[in-house]
Image (cartoon, rainbow, N blue to C red):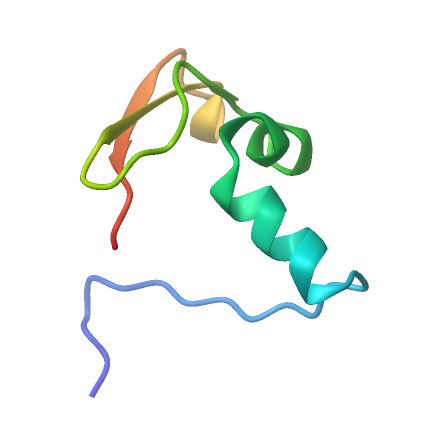
Length: 65
């Protein structure tokens, strides 16, 4: 059962899996794929601070493990 607080979207990327994995696990590469600038690298349990997310000047997101 899906949570009412959840939005899901499925897309197919025309890129090798290794390239996609690098883009979503490396903070600098992540910013190249998505319209955000991350303040620091990803880390287990770390708070992710991004600028430009959803048009907001600064947004804080927690990366799930």
